[in-house]
Image (tube, rainbow, N blue to C red; front, side, top):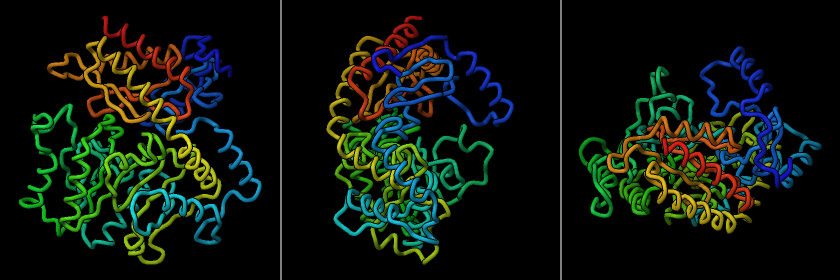
Length: 446
């Protein structure tokens, strides 16, 4: 793939080879396994992907933030190759190995908090969340977990119980975990209480206090689990007072605070963990996606006394912390740390261009982001904020056809999110943004 030629569309997507493969997928793969783009990938490198028909795209999705340091990062690939030559799987419960403990040590060191921390490695974000909740319940001896509207925590039974949206994640899959209490998130653009900042006085925080006083005894609550920046919910960025308020409520009531950093962690926001922007130290952190550098790896990090409250044999799994995944993860974490300044710099460029588009196109109702985790929310009318669902999908389709891989988000199906690699070049970032702006201009004019 030639960097200067990206994007390059040689045949209108989907090309004949992608169409043929899609027909095979329709025959062999359940229709529930949805795909956003109609293309099949043949190669990838850095911030670029090439499909089986020879089309080349700028990638603003990175496997839903699984490739923060880019596709096939040379240093990550070198670490993987070296490890595979030694051994590629040994269950840690049977014969332990160094990569597991080295990665655990690294994550415990970089996670916020002036206290001893321990780490359990698993395979996916949902598994990390399941383990964090399991540990919280064991440590506190309490059953209930407080989760938020618009949240996404995964697709396994407990994780989807914590997830806010019914469609498509929970519909028809009951019964769900009964010990989940849902409460409004600080979605200031669409406040659940119809208020505005700063006169709202953080009603969403006070609502939890009222709930604990009237409806739900904190003596029954093990933890509050929160995404510092909501991902699938629409890249919702709360005020600092929200996370700080949650921390205070937890401290006052003997409740643990779990930060779900599956999508926002590993340098995506210009800090290793998004919660660092809020000067809040959680009791536990869940990680996945980019942690593995493209391989399946996840972690639950927590205070040592909390993690050690579980009996011997109560945590783990056959493939959790696979050695190849661990060396990939360790190198990815090191690279992400080195790239924090670049992420912050490119994040400013990204937000500046999106703000310029906001001024030009009425269809953009809101622009929000930190670092290279950003989004636009599309509306039919800025006053009514009616979601522009159809237009969102049209913009995505046009972007795909013109060489930009980009995806949506949001419970109202009207958000477009931007997740380029944190080491993308300014040139490719601007090219991708120009494709998006052109699509927005055309669709908004209809």
